[in-house]
Length: 334
Image 1 (cartoon, rainbow, N blue to C red):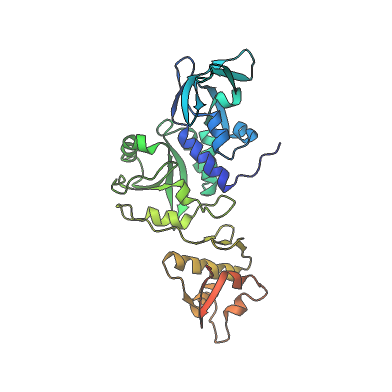
Image 2 (image 1 turned 45 degrees about the vertical axis):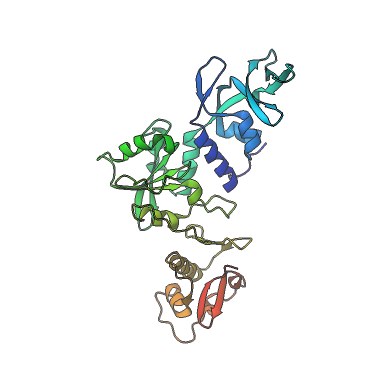
């Protein structure tokens, strides 16, 4: 069975499981395993059995199971059965044997390199700069993904898991003078409280915050990351925009539109890119002359230049660009 392409929903589920993979679970021998029980993955995520096999590794089996008794769950001991594909427990209410499949009783952990390389790809980090992914800076907690172009320059990007329990260790590591003065740390868990000051010029962003959540295919809002990276140390954040333009694929996405706009013409791309940059600066309505000057930087525009000429032969543009005032244009957000 072929796996479905990585979607935004699937990636968010994988990141949630990756965050939870650091939790300790006891097996039947009292040993501590780090991972997620199979029944949790099957019941609370969109992963199929084939995707569980492709993205995770089985590290053992749980020693207890949450049995349902009326409106509550009670942890009961789980035992290996004579059959190879199941475990059993004694129902605390009827005292009868009940069975759990081996897939449900298994403990799974996500492959950190496989998932983090996916994030590095979304950040457009070259393969040559990802060599530290296989060697965690803090085992099971902190990884360096490499350098990504965020705004006008490259910056080191890290990934942290379980930060709420490991913040002290992560902060100590980032204060090392051998590391760059500035960087971005993506986290898979909850954001840090606003009163927590990041070390040096490092900034934190949740991966769920950085992903453009209204498109099917995973896409990271690099403009948002740039604003976070350059934000004050007090944690002030600008809201996610209803518009996103990916300069790499030349795709404009507007939250209220059912499909993105693939922009082909060089002049049209330059115009949309400029409009998006200005929207990030909270300038949502621009004069036609200003937009056209960005589209034709090498030409002197005469009075005959119009937006209709720029988008001639493309009937889609009026779906995505509004003209609420004479000579004024902006993104069509309704």
